[in-house]
Amino acid sequence: MLDLYFWTTDNGYKARHGMEESGLAHNLKPVELPKREQFSPEFLKISPGHKIPALVDDDGPGGTVSLFESGAILKYLGEKAGNGLYPDDPAKRIMVDQWLFYGSATFTTHAQQLGLFTKRFPEDVPPVKTYYLEQFHDFCSIFDKRLGETEYLAGDDYTVADISAYPDIHMYHSDGVATGDYPNLTRWHDAIQARPAVERAWGPY
Image (cartoon, rainbow, N blue to C red):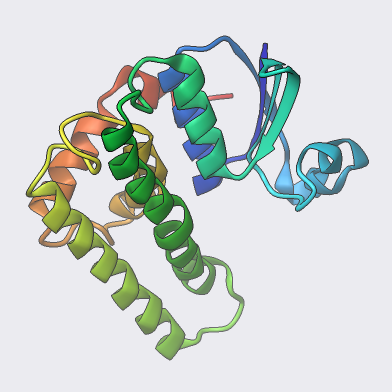
């Protein structure tokens, strides 16, 4: 059985999204960040950097496996599910990997800074807000151009690469930030939003 430790952040939703798409049986274990549960000794054994999401699989390679980092979790779930989320073909894996890491490491990092300075930072710092908003729109333009060439980020197939970028696009799409002149990105967003697994992933827990 898989245990997924998550909270309602972009990275938390990535992992829950990937889990729902995998179709694998699992337990959902909320880690309430406002209560600082991520610093509990039990959780730190799974995620030493006190970050969610984290995953424990008691039927992993060689026995029990624990994982942290959303990108690593998505890749693991895709491989374990064997349903195309992480392809078997080596050439396709190369394409998936680059967009998976771009979404989870490059894009999300900047999107989180935008959220910090526009939603959570106690002081108004207009130059910083402007910088991260411009960066976010640059990412949207990059995604929009790519999605004008292919159906999904890594090609014709829906993969963990799309899951790695979707939560931040979805959050800012809802806020009206990612709804500019990005028709291909909007098409992609709406198609993913309509998936039953995505509806479950963003539902009650």
